[in-house]
Each structure stands twice: as structure tokens, then as C-alpha cells.
Image (cartoon, rainbow, N blue to C red):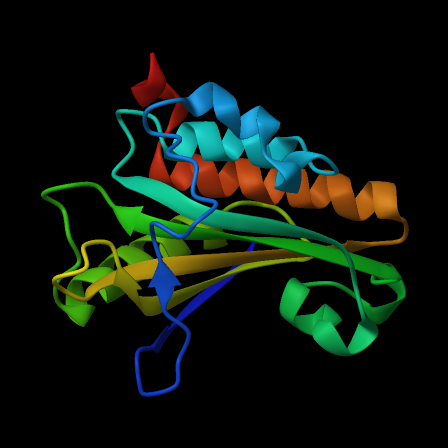
Amino acid sequence: MEADWEMEVGGGAPVIEALWPGFVDLRIAPERAWQLAEVGEFPALAEALARLNAPASPVWTSKCDFWPVLEPDEFDPHELDAQPSDAVLAMGCYIDLLPKAGRHWVLPDAAAHTCKCLCRLLRVVPLRCCRVDLVIRHAVINPERMDLGITAYLTSCGLSSAEALQTLQAALAAFADAFCPPSTLQ
């Protein structure tokens, strides 16, 4: 699986607004993940959100979305470890991640370390035609201070929508495993 990270914390860069008006706190009610509009076309997103918000997880989520079709200029097959002939259709999703209380990424180096560790774990996953891009951003969790968060973009491609969806599901499961291995959920 392809995985990379970058930092976007300069002026004009997007900021993660943790407690936005439509925020649903899945830490308190993980079962509500299946009720989110964003999971309607992509139920695997609900499972990942529930795992990422589980008590054993080091993070919580504040926002997500799913894109069932990406335009050809919105992805590069080679960056997805795919041949152009395998990349007829692509799709993607994103999840905004924030550290749980007491584990704040106060310094960019701490967030970068988390991203590097995740990329190492994901790069050994034997999965082609997909990638994860982790973007460190400023995040507003508490109105009195600026913290850091990570936006995870997952992209997949395939010869059909069904194939791209299956790959994206596998990539999302591997991503959730990297943060919160299944053995920690029991």
C-alpha cells in the first residue's frame, strides 16, 4: 500500500474545525457512525469511524466524507501503485483525526512522528491500487488554543466501481488497524 505524509500549517492552509456545527461525537455514541450521511454509499467508513473513536484508539474523528467518483485529473495511477489500464475508475474518502486528551500533538515533530510510524505500517500492507496521504494541519479543538490534527485521504482505483470500492474498503481497514489493531478492541 502506498502511504505518504506532509505538513500544511502555513498561512492560508486549511484548518480542522473539530467541533463544527454538524459534529457528531462518536467517542460517546459510536453506533451513530452508521447514521452519518457520508457512510450511505460507503458503509465501511462507519466501521472505520467506530474503531478510530473506540476507547483504545489514540485518536478521535471530527469530520469525514466519501467521493464515489474522482475525475481523471484528481489522481495519478502510478501514485496508487497501479497501471494506467487498472485505473479506469477511482474513488476516495477523508477523515479528520485528532489526538485524544492528554496525547496532544503540540509540536509538529510529534505529529510528524505519528505520520511516519503510520506510513511505515501501511507501506508493508500488500495492497495495490490505493494510497493514504496524511496531512498535518492546525486544528481548533479548544477555542483558547491552536492544536494539530491529521487529515487522512484514502484513494483507490480499479477497472470498475465495485473493484475500486473493494480496494478502498481494504485500505480503510488497514488504516484503522494501523491506529487501533483489532486485538486492542477486545
